[in-house]
Length: 359
Image (cartoon, rainbow, N blue to C red; front, side, top):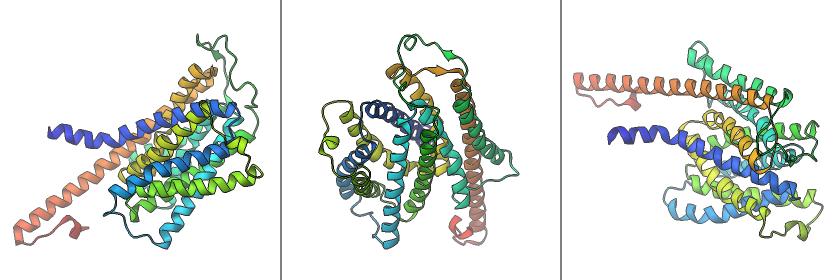
């Protein structure tokens, strides 16, 4: 029983990260279909975050009443900044997706771990021992991602004739996948998403109420997203804001509850346990899941270059995770050694030395 509980505790961040990738893969596939049918990404961002705030706000009030830290001006500023970064990330990503396919968009988005890694190093949220094998594995694995993304982007190759896509036109046939506009927008979304992850990790160090923080970030994103929609949609067009019982409603509800609400909460948990580099290391799984789902649902064609690039990105994932696992083991070993030393010191002179004292 002890072994099972220890295993589940260690496996929980990995299972949470994989679950999160499936959640976002479903959103990207559904959202692409809704965008193809004319849904505005500005309106989608507003609906997605407002309902998430309404759903998760009461949970924060109920379960974190006694543990919620006092609100300060620096925390308020970080929440405002997180909202702005989130709005920029979401709008740029979905605007870029309009000019590409769901698979292509998630492929470009795999640059996120590279940017996240560099920002985490800069802000000292991630440490790398360049002289160790596992430290080099994290660095090499991070930049191997670039090769995989470039392969998926520029190496086309022959089409892989899957039975369910042979006689179906791709849903993105009317979009210019070779234009620079879509990829540039998604690159911008990567930068803002990486900044969001890093600042969220720093915020959770001083504001540990994850549910309340999730609700507040979603509310701010809803307000700032509404302002952006009024500016870029040139006023309030009620026809654009109308939602019916169709794929647009499904995309909004799915994105609001599972991604904006539950997604931010799970991301916060992973950030607290493992840090921003671990969180974004699983992003390549989203691309693989989306590629499979899009071929079934949207009849998107798969090319050999995408398969080769996907394989390279998966190799990168294993390198980074192996390096992170070795880091965790070294930290545990250090703590165990310090505990052992403190126990010996206590037994020899009767003092009550602790690990915290040694640190």
